[in-house]
Length: 121
Image 1: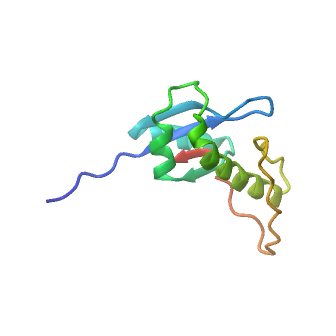
Image 2: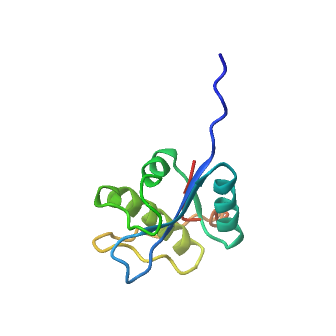
């Protein structure tokens, strides 16, 4: 028995300095997920692949703030983005209150190619 291929899923988050928590601004399966990821990359946003996080974020309604249960996971994602941005000399995204910014990488090879804060699976 062969399993059907997994449908790609994607969730886009927005988080501004004045926001109390990140919110879901786009989400979808299949072609819509591919469009979310492609659009994020076209705009120079980071794409982080995390099927477990996407699965949880897919349960959040559009334009709703993430629930408190996901703060830690999303804060770790934002800290990862902050580290990448700081390493490439860009403007890092704001971190939630109480999250300490990691040190910038000192890799002589330079930063990784930018993908977006759009978790995808």
